[in-house]
Length: 110
Image (tube, rainbow, N blue to C red; front, side):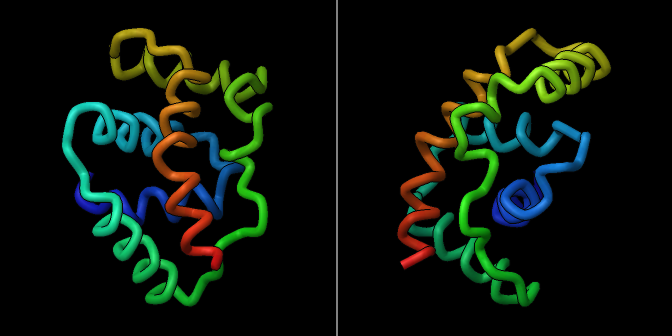
């Protein structure tokens, strides 16, 4: 993934997309690479600013039901099968994203 901030911005704004690749990429980066949260926060802020978009009030990705939604689970499983990746529980992926990104989101909303 070339620009994790753009991917995160896309997930916050366009969660109706059926593609789960960005979730997988961001999760992979969060568990396999060391990322400075201040640098990521600034990159996300600049991405929203450059694209003239605002942070959503309550992104679905931060809602408890998002990681257990039947449709999301089906799409996630199909995505993992398509790329022949290890089966990772979608709720685990979403929880990791929430754990890392929600504090950044809250700071950006201030």
